[in-house]
Amino acid sequence: MPNWGGGAKCGACEKTVYHAEEIQCNGRSFHKTCFLCMACRKALDSTTVAAHESEIYCKTCYGRKYGPKGVGFGQGAGCLNTDTGDHLGLNLGSPKSARPSTPTNPSKFAKMMVDVDKCPRCGKSVYAAEKIMGGGKPWHKTCFRCAICGKSLESTNVTDKDGELYCKVCYAKNFGPKGIGFGGLTQVEKKECE
Image (spheres, rainbow, N blue to C red):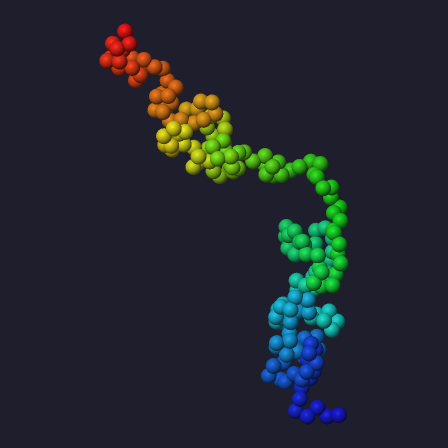
């Protein structure tokens, strides 16, 4: 039977595809609106399409369905893929790892990430970029302040007592020697005491 004025049939919807709206892939014709990934329904173009027999997919879904499987075959460098493949009709189950669950010889980086110092003032993690040492402990720059007056401290004016930081002025007032000549009692108060 002759094909009067029509075009090829769409590979997705089986309706006639006219030349103005035709996209060809793998020897088949598609409407522009029907040229979608068969798994995720994302619109495709010539740079993102991957064909398998009569099916068309985006490169991501094609890789998940037909690409290599197993440890080390993620979607890029350092990728942890948690996709189960359910939307593709795959039953991958839980992946079996060839590696032990806990490393027998943890790397220096792993130890560094586990043993992050805690700030004594706020209790949060102190990372190297924000660490200031005072009184033998790591502090955040914003927490490195006098416990009494709140003044920002430096290595030249910091003193510590019982795990807390003080400026020299507050330390002297609260923990320094008392009496005449030490900023404690005045001459008038001394006469009253006698």
